[in-house]
Amino acid sequence: MPFRILAKEIRPLMRKAVRLSREHREICGVIVENGYFLHLIEVRNKSKCPGSFWLHFGDVNRVDNACQRLGNTIVGTFHSHIIGAEPSRPDIAGADHGQLMLILDTCWREIGLWRIREARAYRLKHQLI
Ligand SMILES: [Zn+2]
Image (tube, rainbow, N blue to C red):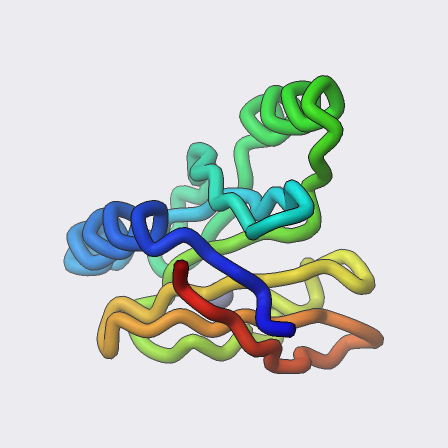
């Protein structure tokens, strides 16, 4: 069964990602699984380098605390690319084994959902709901 993602969450994230891509900046956040769909929660991008992301640890911690109270789980991360919905080599190297990674491609306005496992990315099916 494809992973379900809320179109109403993707749309504003894609708009912001497209806007920031003009300054070569990326958005980023975490993916939360609630048993029904994947919930995308943006966190601050701490990276000062163009075209890269670094999740704000304090923000991730706050999301994680809320998740624990609600019985939800952080299962991965998302970020935007200026072009291409495939994870880069540094993306894969920086990922945890088994995590999900969603990439918003601001050029074609597409999203790619991946599972990172043993230094490889496997594309997953998703459905916007
Ligand atoms: Zn990337």
